[in-house]
Picture 1: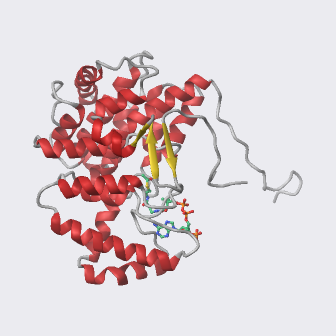
Picture 2: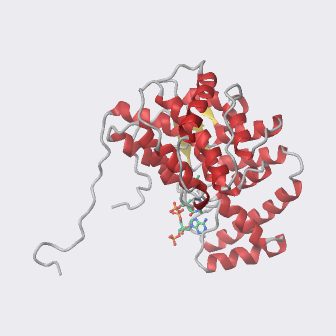
Picture 3: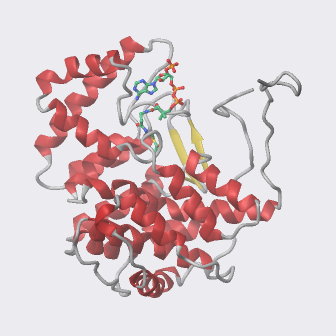
Amino acid sequence: MNAGLDNVIAADTVLSHVDGEAGRLIIRGHDLEDLVARFGFEDAAALLWQDFHQRDDLRVALGAARVEAHRLFSQLSAPWRDMTAVEAMRLMLASVPDGEDAHEPVVMLAAAGVAAARSCRLTAGLDALAPDPERGHADDVLRMLRGREGDASEVRAFETYLVTVIDHGFNASTFAARVVASTAARLPSSVVAGLCALKGPLHGGAPGPVLDMLDAIGDASRADMWMTDALKRGERLMGFGHRVYRVRDPRANVLKAVVQGLKGRANRIAFAEQVEAAALRALKGFRSERRLDTNVEFYTALLLEALDVPRQAFTLVFATGRTAGWVAHVREQEATGRLIRPQSRYVGPLPGRAA
Ligand code: ACO
């Protein structure tokens, strides 16, 4: 019995490979560093989707589908102000009807971007912005999310973030999406399953708490003591540790370089580096048998903060990028035609001995 399914291989995939010993991430034949240098978001999605989608029209198709998603979500009414942003996004994506096979991927990817921006704004009591189909997906989602357009460096930074998180092996949300897909449920249900699995702080919900941690520490001189105290209380340090990586998560380096490239962030980065170093010192002494290093979420928090993305939207933005990966995995799973159905070991009472 393996409660966390550690190291269990449950599928062959051509989509991505996480080498936890080397700290290397390969996405469909490209090292992550090469992918972010050469691919925009639509190109990276098309790379993942090449088995079931025509490559050249994705930017145009996504623009039109964002407009459709906006129209669909405008018909929904809910007590948005009483909901968290993730709850609102979950509700919106759950409202997307099953469609035709060929269009579902574009519909869901567009819907994720629109729902992320719209959920963030409505739950904060702000008006939702309509999409601009002429813009690239990253550009438009950033604009709808913040209520103002980004300059070229901001759009590039946001796009790099979406590409960086586009896929990552058999993580919890991707596995959840594939389990639902294996029952022959359609794509919208599988994507909603992915989002639900992304909600918790152990998977996609960590970047907001990373900023809470930086705020609570306040000054670098307090970082060592803060970390030690948190570990003594049995807390996990957000933005550190990973099921697969035994070394530093390569996405952390990519995102750190992006934040460093944004103007006016030098002080916050210097502080974050000191906090990161204190966390690594504390974790080294705390779990000497298991190396715990920085994961993607630590510099995700810094990057999204630098882009003025509201804290409550961090998980939603992650889902915006990762939806492209979920879609590709769902199609790959569907092609196997195999129901995912493991077994449990019964440890309950036998008949006649039950209380
Ligand atoms: N802080 C303190 N202790 C930790 C941390 C941490 N960040 N990470 C792991 N540990 C502890 C575990 O509690 C475990 O202790 P135990 O043996 O006494 O139970 C030990 O170190 C070994 O843990 P792992 O088996 O390496 O961790 P696991 O694979 O179960 O969990 C996870 C991985 C969930 C990411 C964990 O490291 C964690 O909770 N990190 C903080 C939350 C976080 O940053 N999440 C985002 C991950 S990246 C992503 O999903 C996109």
